[in-house]
Image (cartoon, rainbow, N blue to C red):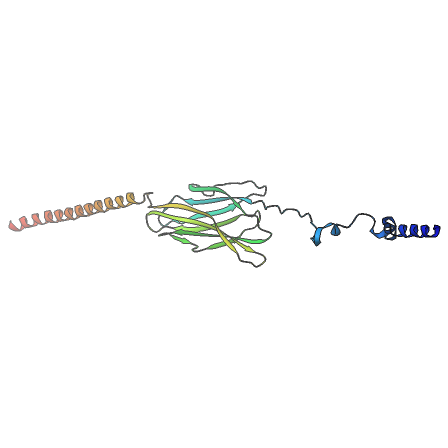
Length: 240
């Protein structure tokens, strides 16, 4: 009986949980993170949320002459400017010009895209250069300027639009996008050398034509009268 009791005691010790833990010491301690997930799910990792890019503030300045003398050349100027400290600095370029200033925001995508500014002047009846689209690369903090030279050949009012587009060309080769940043209406009046334009110039021209005709007619009548008076004495002398 003593031998049987000793045998059962040894068997019980060998099957106890404590004996199992001592036999496998490598299982002691905290379990790895992968074994704590349920049914083989991937472990969760803390990823920081991407911060949105702060748009770049610029100042859109459009300058054009309100009045131009016929035959004279003038300049239309469109610019996107910002100084090094980030302050908007509107400035007048030509005295007497109309100046339109407007703050704009441009998406800050310089690290992933090539940004191109494109501009076009549409104005009918007025000679100007360059015609069509003109483009400049837009770089961080650098100004972009577009210039047009105009020369009206007739007196009158000319209305047009100055367009500004932005092209976003991805550096990874994917499809580019294009958007309108600004479309500004302008009006330019061409005047004659006296500063008159439109109806006033035409009215003055009509008055000048009438006066010129009257002066011409008076000159003709005066010449005829002198001619007639010069012939009468000669006729009397012939009778004597």
